[in-house]
Figure: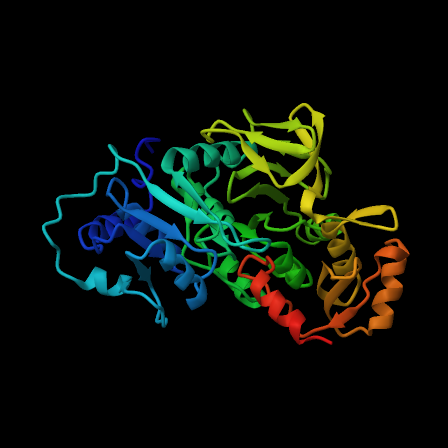
Length: 418
């Protein structure tokens, strides 16, 4: 496969779909790609290659998020593969594929580029746009594939996160376009759906998923036939969970580190190593309390939200978000560490610490266990000053499709609590 022709891959249906769509896409300067089917998503992306159009990947496909996006890009049109009531014009992919050809002259992506804007999740602030192009995405993908030893593999990639999210985009769409990995349509969500998708895949499966999914599936992973390996990202992965997974399956579990701003740039196998390994050619630079990433696919260094311990030999330790650090009674800890300790408690399905307006911490927990039992378990692993006051048991913690907290929905939930 030519590295200059990313969409002329062994999966010919993608190239054919892209060629058909290329002549039939609306002429709007901005296209909001909401396709769930990864084949149609990738074909729609490929169809814009070399056109004077920009693909927008919103952090969520809810009407409220789309409305906010339209405030910035009023000429946008939605590309979708499902029925949805949206506040803007939309083009159904199935209808576009049924239309007669409009003078199509062939699909030729070689001489042009891809223009794409991805948005941060909005878990800690309003979603922010980050422009991407094909060289940025492809260079990073090839380094990731090489670092993980996947360059010669012909595994099928199944992702549980949407392709509109940077992690889902990278692993389940861009990686297959840059390697022998196989792009699949599947996006399973529930444990049994994941098992069936893996079992029915056309080749051994590389599953790209999240810690929340892994925790929900851990009692079933021994039944995952046809699995080759798993990749996890979007939140910190409990090393004990990683060890349990590998013991039950005998398969490697890798963790990726990155962001929408940077794309992925480090990996580790948490069942065996605590330190992160940076991709070749990348480096984390420190200036006082700030850290930035230099990477060969980035046009300039990008400031990082986390703090790091730089350990040499291309390795580092992630210390947590600078804005995540809390100080109470002269003691410090990160909210990420507290969340990990909370969700490690047996019987806790989900949990989240937050700062109250009274210089204290509160927490939400999804569990059948009593609040007293949870507090007793927390006392064994964290200092008394960090115990949540209050602690609320809730049915569900508002998260997006990648498992990150939805800030606006969290505020609504907290406003309803006493």
